[in-house]
Length: 438
Image (cartoon, rainbow, N blue to C red; front, side, top):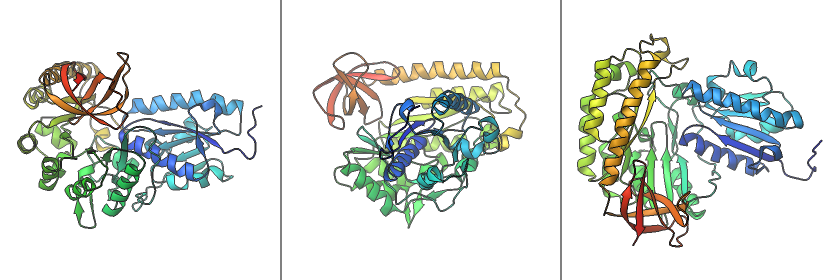
């Protein structure tokens, strides 16, 4: 049987599922465990601790994680001293079911319990469960382990007060609380000192940020003043929280990139009302026009849900028509997935899976065409790309993001990750731009 020497540091394998918030939380967990004397390994067979950081947005994601836990169980069978843990939103959403469905878990910890992970891993209690939601926990004093690459993900506010009827986030991550602006600036400065050139501010409703008299626009401007930082992005804002201050920062601060993710969900007012989205399609349309007027050329993406309970063919057609009008650069589109604990879970699911699938396929196909057309409009233009690393193909090329968050591939000029390179766009698919360095 494999035995690790007493003096050797314990190794942890950490796998992440879900959104960028989970990526940032895994980096936070990595920093906490590193300070607790653990070292990371990418090989689960070599780990003393196996952790999955999980997502609860859709049932399919939860089933995938449960399947992965079953796969990882082989390493615990081979070495019974190995600890197997589940972190994140599933821990709070499925807390009543997890010990029945995965009784072999040693650790179940929600998004507000990461600070105590080294203690929980060392305690002799079996299993260790911490799924409390802490209204005061922001992790403002903890520096994440950002890992490689030129980009740092920084969570500037946690939780959500919106309570959209389809969403479990307020129940899995708790109510809104924001980091003090000084703490955010300190984290930006630490990221720059670690070699990062771009930061991405994260929050379930990131533009609801507010602390010590600073709103989200103020935060963007304060971060832009940090020397050595090249780019600022953020996700995911809520349309009803977009302020003049935020739009002004997008328009006036060169470091704030001209890209906005603006979730739509539906273009039908009755569906938006049933979703509790806090805006009408008329208000959304006016907001989109105002942003595009203030920030010419800004790239805009969105989220859309089809097949929400009660959505008729006519209401779906309104969303399809708005897709034509809005001409998003790209879109994340999903079938409605009922989530236990939400208000929508109690609504009759009136749309068949067949109709949901057909509606989704129709929107995806049209958005693919629009994305291709939008990228074709870039041909001949000069853009600035932050290099991320080698492209998967073709050989001798690198990949990076343009100011408008377009994935761009061009010939390797020797620029290191994080360097900015001016290129001319030669062509594009619906997903990437091909370019030549100038």
